Image (cartoon, rainbow, N blue to C red):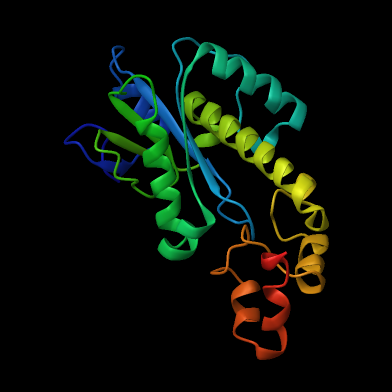
Length: 222
């Protein structure tokens, strides 16, 4: 395991090791994404610098929707926030991993101030052009990453709820584009939209099946 000091590069380290080496003058941005697994919609990332602590921060998946909304409002009011996304077209052309890293780069680029250190959830280096530390399960361990997780989740959920008003068959207001039974059944019976990820199964498999391909594009032309 690499230590947390050293050249400008991304490496893995334990949170205790990381925090023990952080200088008090660091401008730390937490970076996280939401939406790698859904069958529809963009992947959204957020970057957050916390000038002061915020109570109640946790992994967005561990919070109720109402608490995420309350915390997101507080984070955007009190912290420095950058939001980035990669579109369905970018996901299909780049692959989901590269699109996720692109969304993270965009989020950091949109921060109102440049951080001296980025703490990124997971084990993939986004190539931010600044000193970066990768923290496994950082969204549950590091406040800045927790804040980024919450903002990204709220922003993406709001987007999918808006899309659900235009495409009501898929249940996006409740499943956020993930492959629930309702969503998959609607894809099979109604067709798909331009917001569906064609590089993801089952859609990719359907496009390769002549008996199903005609149904896949029905809603795209609606």
